[in-house]
Amino acid sequence: MAKLTNQERSPYTDVITLNAADLVTIGNGGSKQIATIPAGGAVSLCAVINTVDIVGSSSLVIDVGTTGADPDEFIDALDVDGMTVGLPTFNTGDTMLQGAGNSTILAGSRPAKAVSASTPVYVKITDAAVASITAGQIVIGLEILDLIQFAE
Image 1 (tube, rainbow, N blue to C red):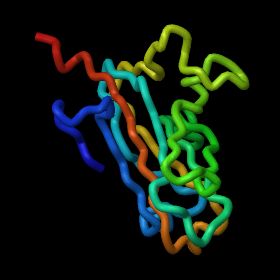
Image 2 (cartoon, helix red, strand yellow; image 1 turned 90 degrees about the vertical axis):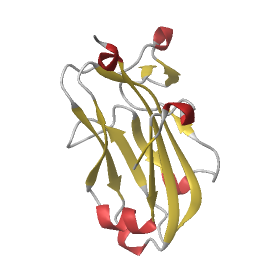
Image 3 (cartoon, one colour; image 1 turned 180 degrees about the vertical axis):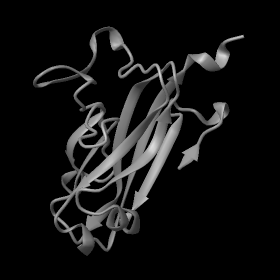
Image 4 (cartoon, rainbow, N blue to C red; image 1 turned 60 degrees about the vertical axis):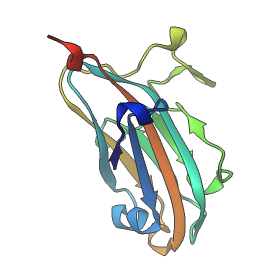
């Protein structure tokens, strides 16, 4: 999990790469912490891209968010193996949408999931065939705002 320097931000602060072995290790129904929203922070962007075709499964679904049992605030029920390689998906989670069927980020482009305490971000895998995955790679990009770092 790479933490980018200011010069590299574009606009992501956290970039997580999961390969086939990572997906198998997380397992069906499993979750893995991939980032942390600092106290006083929020998430303004979450994107997922399939960079290497998933081989060995036709049912790989991921969620990204902060709720341990169902982390779907930023990305909800994304069918990763069905994605076109190289075509990203942005902000489809429960707290990133204006309303049902509307995939536009919150009105006024407000950040989502502002937190008062340090909060983990998880990716959850749902795939009965995850153990059969032999190839594939997904990249998750997060833009996490951290205004408290500027407090004097």
